[in-house]
Figure (tube, rainbow, N blue to C red):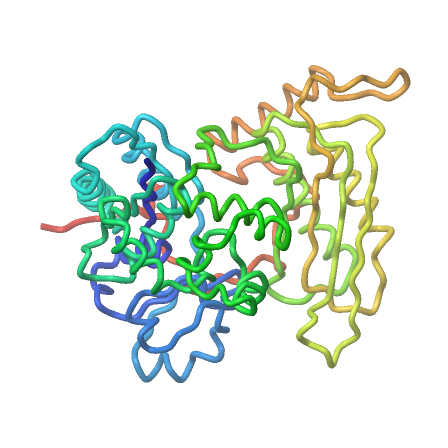
Length: 420
């Protein structure tokens, strides 16, 4: 038996936590460069603000209805997410952190499941201040659907136990939900299913898994089994090791010159190295890519990538930066307005298990101590306290975030002050 705990409009809820004056007002959080709405309060949804809608299209609506917009504040969201997960870890023997705002809890053997769901909801709100909904099901897929039902039906007060209902009532609930809401069923698959007459979750549940396997593959067949109450997805208490690491951002303003492209690339390569060491992995190749803005079609368009193999696998940011810059030098073409550049570390493997090269030098003890020292200083003194000169100091290419809220939980200088 599983409980899926999902934070409601998570980014918006994080912003409202420190701005109680925003309760009941339409609020949106925007993507990088303040581009599109990626989180919306219920009030904003009721006004017709769509997920992914560009902010420039919402200017008139925002003025008319007083929509408040925020730039994404990832440091704040990550910190509050960890606080929510810390509360949940005390309420279940096993927990799988599925995303920044979702977790599966193993609640096998608990008889008062709905009561536990209400306790979870009450404690997270009281201790962290973030509202959540709890869906309970015999499999992870059914728990996901139960959470969807809890969110969409206010009379349930944020908690729904699908398994507490008779079979007939379960079928009635699932019959009212479109097949596209099933976990793992994307838009393309849902259209194919609907063409076959499978329009609701109940329809998919009633379909023969073998038929689904033949037409759609084993993954969707397992989903059907999960809808029928047969658990096919285990809890993943430890996140699986990454096979690739990518760091990329669109620029705040277009970049034309190679030297201007090199700074963000070095920054992304250095960040990728940090993530790689956190994973305890090494990379065998570095891929670099750059492109112009495809939506500005009146300007010349260009997109290219280069894969730079490494003679010896590494987790040293200096080697990663060197390979990334070599790839950029090769793919760069003058005369274009570049909007995005990125680094992908490929073919990752655990550190210390690769065969060394007789002629090439790998990460020696000095390299490992240097990287550990840099990572330790940045953890203790704040991200970016120590950086590579190639990352630059005046970073005009940085992502626009003109509407960003404070670092209320990670910087002493921005700690909220209460006056009595």
